[in-house]
Length: 104
Image (cartoon, rainbow, N blue to C red):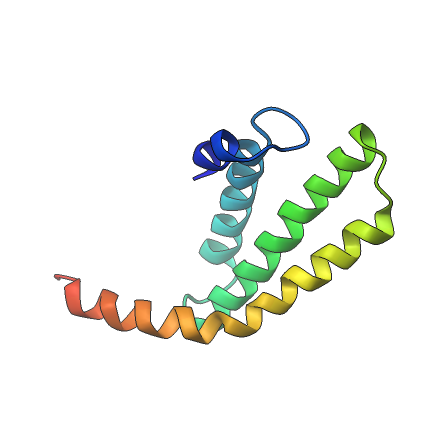
């Protein structure tokens, strides 16, 4: 998914989204595997951590390359974190669909 995002949008550096999504995926996998029981709250926590990690990486690179202020980056992160409120609209239909197609 990161490669597709890099091909269709511009990032602060080449291959930014590929690297950022890889770091986020490894970090959330380690947290889920060792600290949190999978489920709805795990999905919320990993979504929040993914947004925070990706935005912090983007803030660091954009402040270095484009000179954006830290405050504007953090305000954008706060706006993106509000989207976690929509998580039940995504999680529960996909959980239902997964239970229907999963074969044991």
